[in-house]
Image 1 (tube, rainbow, N blue to C red):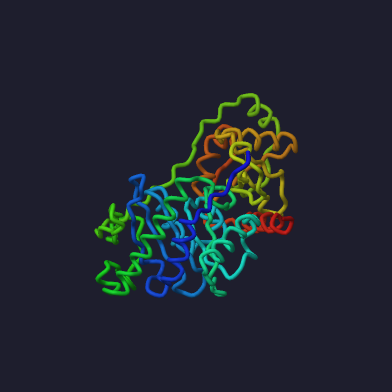
Image 2: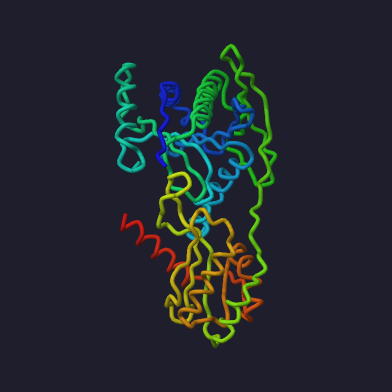
Length: 360
């Protein structure tokens, strides 16, 4: 499937106007605001750049999208495994303002030309410092891409225009009067933080109001009854020994999707022997089109049968893996323990993901 990039004059006009406003000099990433989008949903906006590191506007659509913002806050203090999986859950539309194209490998030459030609046509000088607007769509468990959906192109344009209006009000009336708790607390998972809400009017103006941030939607985890008697019987014939650490996580070896053509990170099951640090069985993964995680368990069992290795005990340190393995371990008589840390497994996953990046 071939995806076509959408990058219109309206998008670029809004992006350059936002860049000119330099709203990141007034707001930090805790000063979020909302905009009523043309589809009726609320878009939550975050301005980045106050700390002089990454300059961008992030748009999180609806309660599900806002979960990404809350996960971003949490990732600042997360361990590597937690941060890795949180990043794979992000669902947002961003406009980054970069010094160059070096780190934006998903950009095509055509897109670069469109940006540069727009600047020339409109007699714009692109600032050498965080001047290039780069639109990015981040989907859960997918590699970042340019924008392919016309609705998403419209929403990010609406967010950028609303941000320009925010900059105008902040400059003329002040941050506090505009409704921001500048220097206050970040939005919490409990929800309820009062933030500005901008609703576009037919005359191009905005109605200013207030809205409370939504509550965090907790994850739910697949907890299957394992009923493959044939596999269980074969596993019963193998003597159990050893202590493994296991985790369900997304592997950084991206695979091109057969569904939408956008490369994805396969959901995988990693295992390492805690006693010697060896990898007892190969990593097992799911294709994107397979949504039944029981298949992951089947492949896990198949690798045990092929190698003749079945652990006496499995340690996990996350609820998703525990939920997936719980009944499987009960049926097979394997002790399943929730522990605070799995350092050998963390090191193995980090090594595999770093190796994947070096191969790119």
